[in-house]
Amino acid sequence: MVSKHIQTGTLFTLSTLSTLFTFPTFPTLPEAEITRRLAGASNREVYNPFPTGFFKEPSHPAAILIPFTCVDGAWHLLFIRRTQHENDRHGGQVAFPGGRVDKSDPNVLAAALREAEEEVGLNPSDVRILGRMNDFLSVTNYLVTPFVGVFNWPYPIKIDPHEVSRAFTIPLAWLAYPENVQVMQRHLPQSRPWPVIYFDPYDGEALWGFTAHVVMQLLEIIG
Image (cartoon, rainbow, N blue to C red; front, side, top):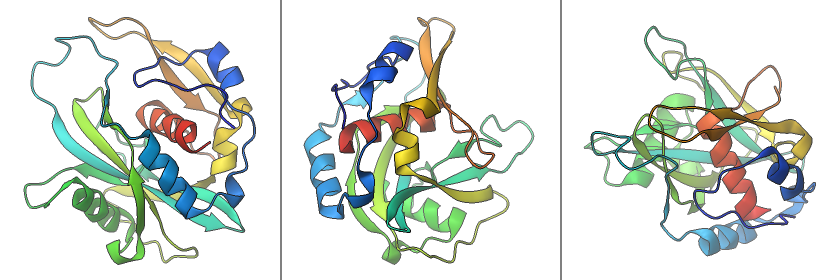
C-alpha cells in the first residue's frame, strides 16, 4: 500500500521513491474500488512543475486513455510505442493511447476514446470508463486529461503503423515495485532542476518521462 500521500506537483526523489511503495495487491482490486479511489483523488488541480512564464502561449487540450486489462488474473496496463518520424520529438517513446483534442470532439473523453480506436483499434463500446485523474501539463505545453478505462482480454489489437510501432502490456504490480523505478534530475531553461522518472526496461521497452509520471500518480491513487 502507499505509505505517503503525494500532493499535486510533488517532486519525486530517490529517497521518497524508496519508501513510497510496498508491493501492492493489485491483482484482486475490483473495478468498483478503482472507481472509488479515482473519484476520491480527483480535485481538478493541474500538475504543473513549470515556473510562471515558462510557456509563451496557452496550453493545448489533450487526452489519454489509461487502458486496464486483466491478464491471467492480474491487472495490466496497455501501452504503445510511437512510430519514429523525422522531427517528431515523441517518436519512439512509450506512451498511453491519446492525443490532441480536435474541434470535432464533443469533449476530452471522446478525444481519448477516438485516439485509442485510431491507434490500437480499441472500440469505444468495449471500454468501461472507471474515472479520470487530475490534468497534467506537459513540457510540450499540452494540458493532458488522463481517463482510466477497462477492456476485456484477449482483444484483437490493431495498430495504426503510421502512429504506433507496437502495443504491449505491463503488469501493474511490476510497475509498483520500487526496485523497477529510478529518478534522474533534468535541467530546463528558466526552471529549477526537476526529476524525470525512469522505469527499468520491460520486454525491451523504456517507460520514462511524462508517461512514467502519470503511472506513478496512478499508483499513488489506487495503491
